[in-house]
Length: 241
Image (cartoon, rainbow, N blue to C red; front, side, top):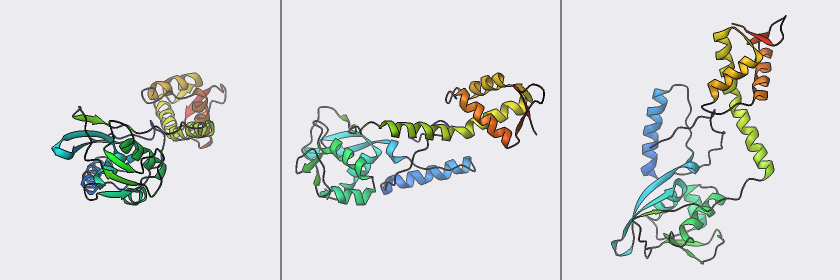
């Protein structure tokens, strides 16, 4: 299944390069053709760092399991359909997964007790580029369905947190401006606090806009001559057709 996220509700993220398996690429292209055919003028970029997958795996003595993994983990595991041994560097070259993400992915697949569907040599917590990985045909579990999480990345630093919030606010500006224009096009003339209330009502299902940000977007629309202040009552705004 595919979940489509819109930039108005989600912060813009870079789309890390990831070489999806050929079996998955065909399905992705079919959905792309369908989606862009139904929604002209839109763009679609795959966020492989946010997906998940269910894989059917057969281990030694024919023991079968269903593995619930991230998209990155899926890309790594499917390489072992055609290889017995791969180094971390070889996996990076084959998948193009960013190295920090790849290392967390490999730690989750090889170093977590009860989830270690891969083997690592040498068996150390840290991962070097020349460390070797093997499919663990001796893996066993009492559960048919095995959920393999991902080792958690370090939390954002305060500067990174501020940058993320700023990026979210930047992404939401067009959504807020579009809501202001819809309100004013319908009402023609409206008082400042009523604009804030109606714009908030329109957008609350997606996010709660900051009144200060709405005010700034009103100012921007005035500068671009979408709106104007009433000459008598400066708290009133008029829509300019």
